Length: 555
Image (cartoon, rainbow, N blue to C red; front, side):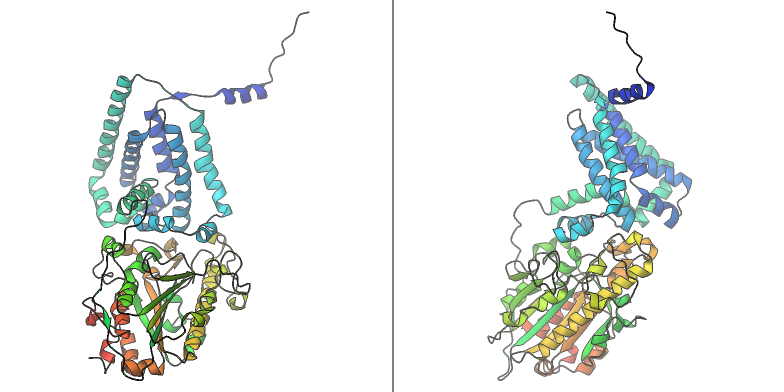
């Protein structure tokens, strides 16, 4: 019996052809194509900034395209081989897709400080950034390119021939990059000189280079012990009959002065503090950085922004260690992602595992959890104390999760982490509601101190940095300090002193109110807090102590 072969239907044939499609390419061509894909598809914010913000002309745009593509191809040519190309590109496509999404959505600059923030982000923060909006970018920028790469066959060559071709490719890419630079050299050099921050928009070079810098500065493994500072610190003895001092230092998170009611905001977002006549507001305060990772170590450091050296700040002890050297008891209570080593070796209490059903939902707790059980932790024992309360505050983008329902006063709100799905007014409403809750939290903390009979008490509140809420297309924070908008660097600060604390310090509160009207910064906090405990040390700088000239009894 003779078998009759039937013709294969065209649809099935085309599908089979696709399944059999496995073109052979050289590793060098794959590097160049990958680099071109990154430059075109993964750098929306770079091109938008060049065209819309910097008004770059066509010649400069061509030069940037050629220079970036050639340079990234050169770097890929250094690491891609027949054996490493596919796994490395799989990783690179996936991470670049994520980077492109966040840079394009929030206009963040992936500099070393931002990468350090990413590496130290806790699971709660990270989960808020995993949103449905990631699906399409991951599909188009990662899944499809990865699938295409794994369909390719990479050309085999003898070792000697492969080495010569690779050297020629690397030399060619360097020449092409040089040609791109020379094509618009004057404009490109001006861009590099006047807008250095633009390099942190070039994806994936931005996060690869920044990650390398972070790893070189802080290699993986156990952290080195912090170098001691202020070991000469000692407190002046209190007068007979004076009670021990208690300072509650509230470290705020992501609150900007522009939306702070006491600073003249059109909305009253601080009604409870405004009703307290003994609260002193500082309306003109500059932060040390635009991210927690920068600002927190900086504001607790004697070096500060005025003598900024990130490596020195991160490798040395903090204000809290100096106070401990002087005999002050230190407690850090945290509703955030840790103390960034400024409380290393000191008493630390994370509230992340708290289970109070009124304040916690199993993932996060509202900031009032920081006051829960606090009085039991600070029972007077004759020693001075400082308690740092590190808030979750206004940490974005999930502003709507930072306050209980009772504080949903400004509506409609943005009830999602995907800020692009909300109007700017909805975002601001949610943000302002979170400020309202911080106002309530601070008022509760002050009331707690008023009713604490065992201490002469004071409270200092300052936010670590501000936040962008869509101004100039910017969201969140972390813009390099040199170009950061005021929304990210102008922060609220308030102080409160019990009558006993003011008397013990010889404080003229009228004088303090006058000082509060002057410009201040995070740099003032280190000497001011030392002065509040009358700690003497060579690190104390009286010129930066905000209260010094108002303390008539200070020697």
